[in-house]
Amino acid sequence: MRLNDNFHLSYCSNIHPGENWQKTFDSLKENLPKIKAKISPDQEFGLGLRLSNKASVELSQNNNLKEFSEWLVQNNCYVFTMNGFPYGNFHDEKVKDKVHEPDWTTQERLSYTLRLFEQLAILLPEGLEGGISTSPISYRHWFEGDLEKQIAMEKGAANMVEVAFNLHEIESETGKFLHLDVEPEPDGLLENTTEVLEFFENFLVPAAVSRFNSIGKSPEEATDLLKRHITLCYDVCHFALAFEAPDNTFQRLAEAGIQIGKIQISAALKILESKESTSEIWDALAAFNEPTYLHQVTELIDGKVVTYSDLPEVLKKQAPFTELRAHFHVPIFLQEFGLLKSTQDQIVDTFSYLEDNPGLTKHLEVETYTWDVLPKNLKIPIVDSIVRELNWVKSQL
Image (cartoon, rainbow, N blue to C red; front, side, top):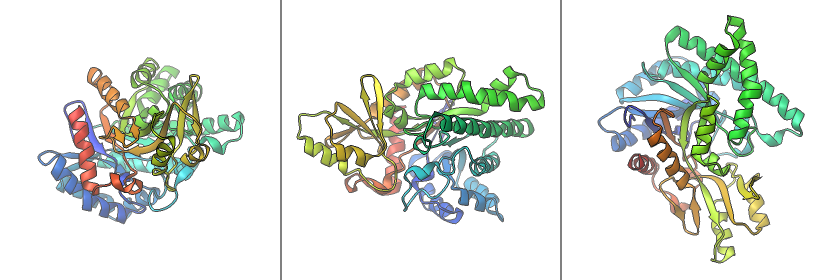
């Protein structure tokens, strides 16, 4: 929905099942009108659409895309952003590090992303910009050494620049402005602000200068076009796990001319040292240990972020700590979960920065996708859960 002239707010439909187009469309038809009726009954409601590769292929077949476009108009809804991070199924099976497959070193990832942009260009209403969030190149632990990581970064940069080249062509032909929003996360090849800055400077910009030279663009023009069409997806949970304050990240990126394409509003678990029984804290944290998604845990030790690859590693170790943060997208409207807390304060700080800098981004998307695997005491019906989160954001903004 349009909050004002500055922001479009929605939720990401990756919370719904959607391994193919029929299931995706059925989920949207079942849930989206109910959500809109409760959150935005008298105005258009924007959607953050998630399509698996299979769903995207099937959407392009027969009359599906036209049918979906007409359904959106009939229900006074629109698509302004998409989630192109998970390529395959995202529910009812073990995902873990497979969420990065295929990664940005592959043709499969490039083809999938270009197809999504072709579809978004058709679905996007006139006068709006559109973005698609995506993987931070690959999963860090798939590469044994610095040379392997460098090769992956080079391949990933070349493929992302190819996307930027295509988006420049789309804008030249149709006037529609589209951007690819790269989403850092723990154990991705891009985890934090410094790594994003280095990736742009050392890999993306050189690749863009080479690619855009083919159409006569100078290095300066190529760099500007790159930074127009390749932006950052700022997932609040992920940057909280990196122990980075929002204003620091936003200011450093702005100095480098890197734009924020989308803010994904999400919260991580926060576990603080307590006088309560340590065993009770570990038991409370163990309630969030589930087998579907990766739940990396981070800790700040002597000014350096230490990342544990998954929650079981920390639960098994049970070492003394001052503060741990766990990659579990918990409901954003809650500050505490019994003995555990959340990084909701990072969301509030992000909103405070937005208030003073309304031009930071136009796209806000709630991304609490873990509803199916939440502890039972935190679950309410899915429509009510989404509405509750959107209403909390509206109250904060």
